Amino acid sequence: MNNLEKRTAISLAAVYAVRMLGLFMILPVFTLYAKSIPDTTPFLIGLTIGVYGLTQAILQIPLGLLSDKIGRKPVIAGGLIIFAIGSIVAALATNIEMLILGRAIQGSGAIAAATMALAADLTREEHRAKVMAVIGMTIGISFSIAMIVGPLISEWGGLSGIFWVTTVLALVGILLILFVVPQPPSLHSHRDAGIIKGYLSSALRNPTLIRMNIGVFILHTILSANFIVIPLIFRDSLGFASVEHWKIYLPVLLLSFILSIPLIIIAEKYQKIKPLFIASVVILIIAQFAMGLMNNTLFTLLFAFLIFFIGFNFLEAVQPSLVAKYANVNNKGTAMGIFSTAQFMGIFVGGSLGGLVLTHWGVQGVLFFGAIMATLWLIVALGLPQPKFYRSMVFKLNKTALSDPNKTSQQLNQIAGIKESAISLEEGSAYLKIDKNQFSEEELKPYKT
Image (tube, rainbow, N blue to C red; front, top):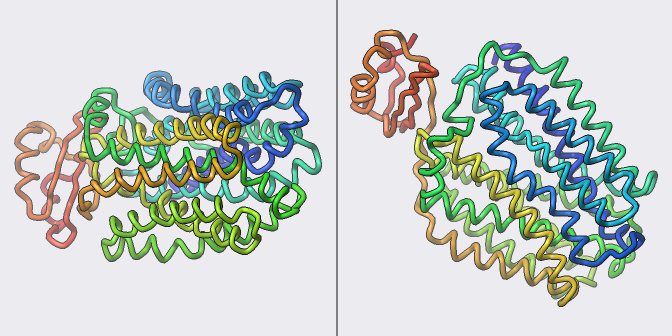
């Protein structure tokens, strides 16, 4: 990558990180503080945790499409301003309804699609995947940091302290967008990284992608529901004060991250992604049942917590890769946008349903609910086809190739190793899926700029 691309990757990752950190920090502490808020019920606790996922899911694709028209930076900066307003509303809240409103406003600043599109505008085709990977990694890193610093900040400033810190983080993100993130020379729709309105229908009807969307929905349903009760277990069953919860999160998250890396490498390098994917869903089922049956036993609970996050980390990492493998070369970016929307809807449903289950069946009921959801996911996942390990490739076409795109497309499809191709006249680019064992890049010389 050149200096511009490195700057793009680092600065946009930082923007994404400060926002996700602000959203995640209440997860490990909110349930513990909620009893001090008047008229709070378990359902309202879950709704507060998950409602940002609803507004995020509703607005993510529309705001991504809006950024194609008015520009990426205005949409991202505007989203961060909305996020800051929601954080202030939540920080000043004196009742649960105001907190729910604040969290809903936070989610309305849905900048994920616009951020990825800006990254694509600022990077060359051959380096785009690297930049996307750097930005994507910040989600997991932000989650881990939030689990550790959330309890510490709450000890210092209470629940409102977390939201004031979140407000500051949003303002930092705005400054990064305005003064650090480069300005793109022009706007383009990118089939590999952006949402293309014309491909929404085909991506939504793809049976394999539907299975993937159901999977990420269930994974984040389980995660949100779990964090309604896990802080209570740490405090009430294990005797850890809220400020000490980081002592559990830090080693568990660090060790689960280390142990999941070899699985991710094996899945991709040795093409074992489907069996390890299925095994990881089974691990979630075992972890949920184990936590439900042994939630007052320190070492068994910690072991179950650890294997849950090993499975979660692996699934969180490989699911986007699987979506890219299953998606048509034309609608990869659109498929990823829908996939992300399903993820945020899972956060909302997990919080809301988790609160209802807690009301009627208690802490163990929530954990068993997660086990049942993971079992349903296993049934859905077993029907996934074996993915093809083709590599995506994008390159600029020369004027001769663009003068007759139909002829160029036919010729590209006849080159050994090219499994799918699509030409975007707007971008002047060709999108390919290739089998690297059969393909020679020398064959593309007559078509490249």
